[in-house]
Image 1: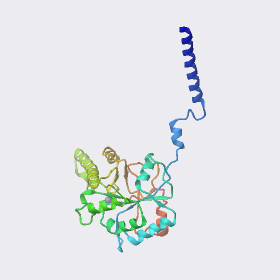
Image 2: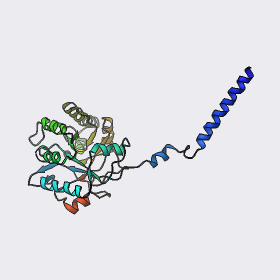
Image 3: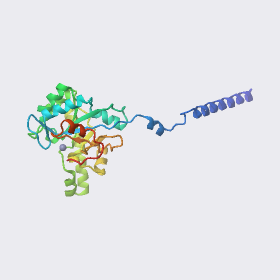
Image 4: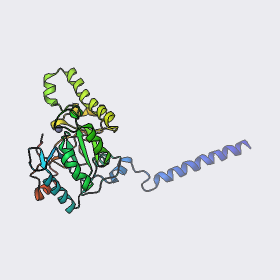
Length: 279
Ligand SMILES: [Zn+2]
């Protein structure tokens, strides 16, 4: 009786091993994870546009007139570009969401100038355009040129506006590094990255995990500090499209000037090669 049971158990082990070997031998059964990942669709290049200020009539070095901005929106619609939230593109580049269908474009605005509320907000509300604002909170409700907390809250409530970090007071990290000791500089960088995130999160009740580098200044030490502070992506001004092989903490954005109209705006959206860094 015992020997019969032992033989049965032995047969069972043999059958299990045989079935396992058959499964491994099936076509695709031995495919590696890398091969599977290579088959997953990747994100096509996407332009992430960077604006600063808006004015009803007068352009400036970083000011686009409302008329030109509206013409740019019309150009995008005429050329079948979908304006998508920055989060969708970052999630796709991080591999946590499917690729965003192209042609698509992202609109970001740096610095929190009050014209974002007075000039831009009425247009994006009318046209239902999603945008992301990169804000340095030390200026909010303090500097005369800046937005107020109430304006930010009102824009967030529209569901069209996202707010992310532009450090705490928009320092020039190159100058700060030159005039501080290494330990002091490291503490300064950490404060600029963490205080901005925590103040925006507590004042606005949002999650902040993206960062735009002030003046586009960026290096590996800053990138590591941003990752340590809890950011998942950070943005430079590099004048080229964002691609899946780009560094997640130095994602390129395209600065848009008032001269970007018609064909020249179209050319801006299709540049894959590196342009001049633009502070
Ligand atoms: Zn800035």
